[in-house]
Length: 171
Ligand code: FES
Image (tube, rainbow, N blue to C red; front, side):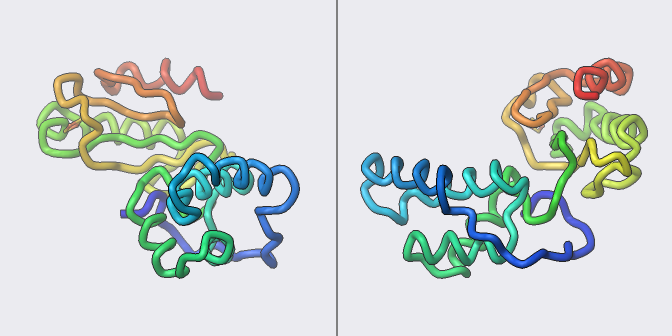
């Protein structure tokens, strides 16, 4: 399932990502992988770091550069919640709401996150552009419900009461 869902973004004309430094970064990866195609995941990270999200045009560019089909690239992008198929806030928050965490109150954590960030709904971005919150499947920390990921920071045992303090570090 893809990351943030919402209205289809309007896309400006595509400026190639893989020029200059990003191209050098990608080409430096090629010798480390058995094939060019095997560089797909790091190539997508480069796109996301450069543009903040991975547009259909960027997927097509990656496909061309790596000799893959756009459909294959899209299949990979939409499989992982870490890749953004829409613009997202500066801080991307993923909350586990799978059954064990659900039973331990993840719904209340989600509500607190939506309220404190001002996002209002899952998958939308706050008006100040700071936060996007999504729910995800098991984050592999079922004994520490509820875990959340804020960007690359993994935070365990989150309760609604802890949410304001956690978010204060990302304002
Ligand atoms: S079910 Fe939430 S981390 Fe596993």
